[in-house]
Every structure is written in C-alpha cells, then in structure tokens.
Length: 387
Ligand code: NAD
Ligand code: MG
Image (tube, rainbow, N blue to C red; front, side, top):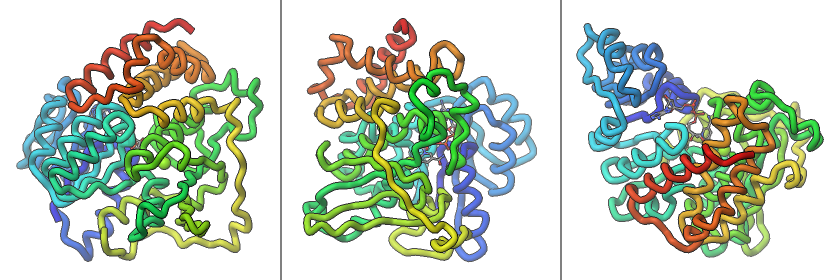
C-alpha cells in the first residue's frame, strides 16, 4: 500500500507512524512522502526510518537544514506550499491529511484528485471547503474517510444504513480543562492551563480549541458536510470520560454509539484498514473499571463558540471560511497574550457581524483560489479588530 502523510511531525502524523511501525510486520506499506513544517529533526528521523521517497517542509527557510541532514540518503527534498500540493499529485492508495489549520485545506482538495483514499484529520478542510471537497471527491472517485474521532464514530454507526433514516447525530465532547470552572474563573486562564486537556493528548492548537469548545464548533460544521446533515440534526453533549466518541439516532429512535479507549490510532487504523478491520496495538476497553459513563448539557454561556457554530450551520454560503479564519487569528492572539481566553469568541462574533461578511451567508465559494483569498482577507481583518 502506497502512503503519503501530510503533517507527519504532528500529533496525528506521529500516531499514524506509530501504527505503521507495528502493522508493517504483517502488512506491506511504502511511504512515498512525509510533509512537515519546522520540526526538521523529526522529519529527517522518520524519513530515514521509513526510507521515504520524498520529504517536504512547508517552511522554505528550512530547506538547507533538511538537505544537509539528509545529504547521504537517496531522498527527494522540497520546500513550500506548492511542493506540498505537488506531493498530493504523486498519487497514493491512502493519504492522511493531518496538517493543522487552513494550511491543510488546499492540499486536501488536491489529494482527492490523485489519491484513492483520503483520511481527513484536517477538519478545517470541511469547515472551509466542505461542499467543494465532497463534490471533488465524488468527481474523482476518491473515498473520503473521517479521522476525527467523533466523525469516525458517526461513520462507523451509520455504516450501511440508509442516510435518509438518520434522525440526529450527537457529538460527544470532553468539556476540556474548564468544564468545572465558573465563567469568572475562565476569564483569566493561561495558555498553559488551556493546553492541559483532561482526556486527549493532541497538538497545541486543537488542545486550546478544545478548552474553548471551538474544536467542537468546527466539528459540528465538519459533520454537516461529511454526512450531509441539517442544523437541527446536530447536537453536542458533554461526556467527560471520552469513551463514547459520538452517537447516531435513527428515525425509529434506535441510538448507536461507538466506544473505544481514547487513542487516535483507533480512528486512523479504521481508515487505513477500511473496509476491513485489523488487530491494532491499543488497550482494551474496560467498562467495569470505568464504572460510569456520564453526560451533561453544554453551558453555552461558558462556551459561546457552540452558538456561533449554529449560526454557520444554518447558512448555505462560505461563512465557515470566515468563522475559521477569525478563530485561527483569535487563537494566535490568545497564545501571544494579546487577548484573553474568553475574548476569542468575542473576536469571532465581531468578525461574523461585520456588514461585509453577511454576503457569505448565501454566497458559496466554489474554487480553492476564492476560498484562499477570503481566508487571507478575514485573517487580516481579525488581526486589526480591537477587543
Ligand atoms: P499538530 O500541531 O500536532 O501537527 C500539525 C502538523 O501540521 C505538523 O506536522 C506541522 O509540521 C504541520 N504544519 C503546521 N503548520 C503548517 C503549515 N503552515 N503548512 C504545512 N504544514 C504545517 O496538530 P495535530 O494535533 O496533529 O492536528 C492536525 C489536524 O488534525 C488538525 O486539523 C486537528 O484539528 C486535526 N485533529 C487532530 C486530532 C488529535 O488528536 N491531535 C484529533 C482530531 C482531529
Ligand atoms: Mg474530534
């Protein structure tokens, strides 16, 4: 099986390699390419271990370092955004889109044109280009499989059911590190506190997005496009144990759930082995030691991001691009101590309310260049918004 890993140095990328390291004893894999950004050390280590054909860093300033470290190996070395797009064009049996943020969107669109299976971890691809991505996959007969644990769970629950019989989808959320904080306690939290996720080990940005529940907000929009759902078919429930990864209720009121220990290698392996299932090296689910699976309503005063997502869900245009770009800048500004934790949702709300954004409630951008240009414009605007 020929494989490409976009974002191999990140949390999902490393989980993928950890899985392949074990599965390669019984299955044949050929890793065609790995892509990363600044972590050249990790990129080189993995390129050598897995004897990859090509390595790419998104950061052009790192090319000399990359070339120097790999000078005695027979490997193609490239840098820059265009080189990542070109890597998708190598074609593969399975590619995982695990770049963080909007940077992952154009490569995912390109991947569906050239690769048989595209495992999508980069939720921004569906938030910003959901319709374009699903349609392109359809046109090029590429299979999109969700890696996000909630969406992978939904995918497994829906399985061969008739999509028309889905009544609603219930996404679970851990509630993050501030689930038991009061609103006033949340007003002064630090970046380190926000990164301290109680149940999952993930990259820095998605960890903070989980603390603000912007991650769940993005996932609601992701689910809308992945499963072609209406806004009133999407719900979120807090489930602090993170064992049920999501649920689907059908029109006969049967609800199916997918349960698994919280290890992303489960969802990654599901897409890698699809449509088969294979034994993978993660721990067993031990329900008796867990004792409780609990559920709570989301407090939307503490987590206004969920309500903001509902605005996007009700629209047909490209407001998802606006939402994501404003959120990415809000996150940057929180990380650099420019704004407070709760101001991230204030900033996103302010951007969504700008008169010039109302156009995107109905206007659906259907080319990647238009999507990139709106993303850039909203990022610029969001930098300048005063809080
Ligand atoms: P991460 O920060 O750990 O890794 C991100 C990867 O993207 C790295 O390889 C990095 O080098 C690369 N990258 C960063 N900026 C880039 C740029 N401008 N151009 C090209 N590459 C760039 O992130 P992660 O936690 O692995 O998450 C990756 C994606 O998967 C995100 O979209 C996230 O929302 C999604 N996701 C992650 C998890 C998880 O458990 N970590 C779960 C579900 C979904
Ligand atoms: Mg998730």
